[in-house]
Image: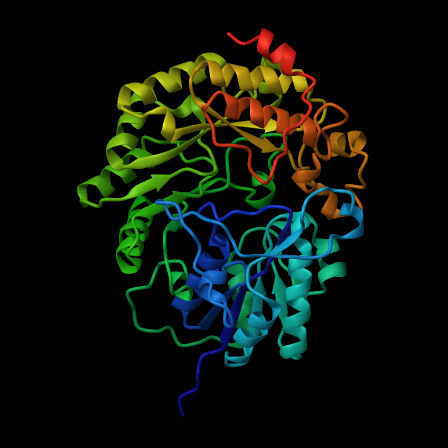
Length: 471
């Protein structure tokens, strides 16, 4: 008698935040796990609670998309948690409704195991709510929680969200063996067109795919959790990545590909360069994007030219700060001289300022408004677009203890206070009002988009100084 293979349900829970945007956003780690489980023979299902386009039931959602497949998420205003009550912003749940989630679950065969992922530590309310609903519907099914929040705060996740098991770190062969021991070993299926790919077939509508040519990062930036989430830097085989890009874009009819690498250009001669040359030889007409940022020092003329002819449309450069003291704290990964050289090779390769944005960190422990303004001005002088990235304290990183000392918020006790909207380490200088002022200053140069998230016209005490220092 032939038995059905064990059924595993993958869940990406809601985002709960003051702002969220679909910037080529997919739970790629969860989808990679789903692909592994499918390929060894498990029956796999997916519910992405953030994706209202694919997973709404009662009210269809058709997002207004940019030409590259990004767009707004459906949001539902909800009551702010008490500790966030003073923030003058609307707090929302992003994605499908609770009823839609329950309806999706009711339509599935009962799962034998539920794997739920997590991302930002301050998004844990969505994780908790998803697990509560799952418990109510599938009373006997074990629920395992993994992902970033689970890895960084496993005890909090276990106590507050109450999964049956918390998985820390990356998905490993041992984790797969534990699943096999729990559910039994299924019969491997015959190869299919999806074999070897992430579980992209869990979605019906596709506007882009995401890919990683490596996991982790060889650098140890003090503000970053990459080394905590992936203790070892691992590069994937070029042929495997090329197949994932070419087959994924063909199967799902998309042109846009977002690289999720933390270190895309590390060892470029043996990874990035042969990968992109191989994709060029395949004759693919694709558009590539780098939302995670690329290392400026590693950007050469050869790479810039290859990026241009390959079809890179969105380049994000990780400058972070322009002051040597801050750059030293970030591991001396770059300098203004190297930034100028990188811009020069990009412009010579044919990139325009429209394609380039430069990440600058804002709200770091000990950072001053003068530091931020100086960095913004240095980027504006070069005719490119600053993109301000508000600092979020991350447990276990080198900046964590300092963040806890300077922040007025209970960072250790309440992950909600890690939310970058609070500017939890900005002090009296870097506040919402002064940050709005910098965003308006950037917009006034006509080099960047208008301030996002409803930033109001502020009284900006540094405006006079900023104007005096303008080149």
